[in-house]
Structures are given as structure tokens and as C-alpha cells.
Image (cartoon, rainbow, N blue to C red; front, top):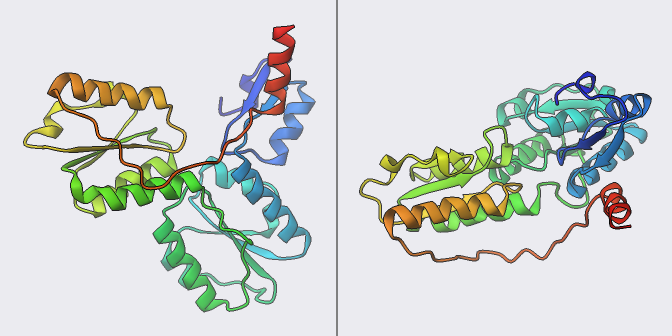
Length: 258
């Protein structure tokens, strides 16, 4: 749902991985909704940083995309403290009255390269600006971008499995295009156009950070079935991070088991 008015009272409401603003939490409590908070811990980290900077009187430059759910939720923690920057050009022209207490934060699903350029421009313009102790861009987002940069030279076509409203999925497809490889963002096997592979020998398949593994496998199986190809797994970086289920969901599962 896009509006809490669509949710019947006393029903379950799942907060997405992108996170939500404090106002949405208040409205949910007022309507007695049973909430399950599935906000990604990496997004929660950014929210906590925003609260800390705002409480300390900082003006916060948020690097992100206007209208993205994660940006809306983060800025909702302290609306008066934030200024949004989307590009290097905006970072170059932004005017800020307060230059003594400035901080920057980033959306977690951005292009690593473009974000680094924006941060560099902000540091050049505002030498005293401070940032988080550890970078905010999601490790899964970074790893997949690194994989596309590393492996795209070996492929004729790139398929990115992910939603069209997924920021990190779109960045992967854009990255492939900048490396001169035909790149297609797909929701699943039904979106695949066989004409894409005319004359192609090798297809690179990757996925957005939250794409279900089962859908990725369906796409790979479809290519194997149609073209009789073989699959070679390439590991650029091992991921050891594991997140637990939301506490509310764990409690629900326990009660169902009883």
C-alpha cells in the first residue's frame, strides 16, 4: 500500500526494507495496526546517524534520489535539518548558510562511483563537512556493482533481475550500459526477449540486492532450456553478513508453533 488509509484496522502491516518515517509509525500506532518492522539494519543505521546529527545541531546533506522511499523515510527523522543532493552538479551549486556544523549521509543503494564523486565535491566546497564513521552504501549493492565492473568484459549481454523501482537494480543496468554491454532490467523470466541474444555467446546474470534467489534461478534455467547453455558461477567477493528475522515475525512464528 502507498497510504495507511488503505490498511484495515487491527490488521498486520509490514514496513519495507527501505524504512519509514516516525510519522508513519505514529499513524500506525494510532490505528492499532500490528506492525512488523522489516527495515534493513543498514537503513536503520542511517536513520540513527540522522537523529544524532540533527540533535547535535548539524545541517545534513543527504545524497540520494528525490521521492525514493528510503530518502523519504530518512528525511522524515528530522525534516528541517536536511538538504537533498542528487548529482555532482547540485553538490557544486548548493548554498548552505551554516558551514560550521555540516554533515552528509547517503542513501544505501546508490552508485558507489557517483556517490564518491559527490562526496568529493562536497568536501572540496565545505572542508569541515563530516560524514558517518562507516560508509552507508549497502555492502550487497557495492559487491554487485563490483561484479558487473569485473565481469562485464567477459559477456555479450547483461541481465539484471530486479524491480524497475529498485534503485540499486537500476544502477546495475546503468553500469552495464556505461561499459558498452547491452543491459536489460527484468522482473523475471517472462520479461526476457530472446532477440536480445542473437549472436551472443555469453550472458552475465546478476540481481538487485533484494531480488529473490528463486526468481534469479528461474531466469538462468530458462536460458539453459532455450539455448542449451552451461552455467559458470563467478565469485567476486564472499558475503558473510546475516540478518535475523524481525522480532515481531519471530514472535508470530513462535505463537503459531505453539
